[in-house]
Image (cartoon, rainbow, N blue to C red):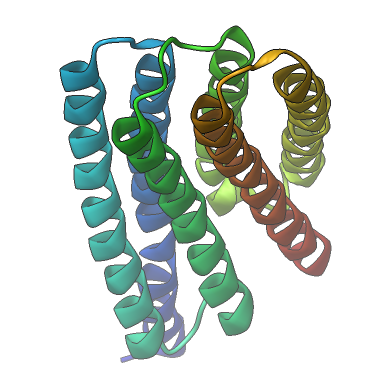
Length: 216
């Protein structure tokens, strides 16, 4: 076996990370689309059904996370630093977990009516998930597309800032105008969970930005 062929075997192994990250992002995007539907839904049974479907995507995400961890253990060479791969996989898994937490609260608390601002936050979470999917599809050309990826990461960070503004406005209005204490607590907890989900999306984008800096 000549040296070029020997090195090519390692290249094939390292590229196995790229489709796995795309699969994780695709699965997350499907969950975020369901979260938007659930945030806009008023029927209790439909809310529970959508929460169950998001849970299925969380389960799939756990399986993909375990798979990428195993590939990381088995790989001789990796396209990025091993710690960066592990931390990014963890952050992406946490993003999906937060979506699941939010959907679970909606299904359990059953607020009286959907909130326009909470629907907006869910839509921004979905937008961030879509951008993340777009980014993962560029991992195999990270050096060539470093500027594009960085700009997309900045877009996710900007989404987080926008969500913060919506969240603050929503909470101010909620405490001022919601007369039902139980309903106030329900809506506050759901809003906080959705806002946390946006925060984690920003963490994911920051980790990717760091990988770009190291590999450009």
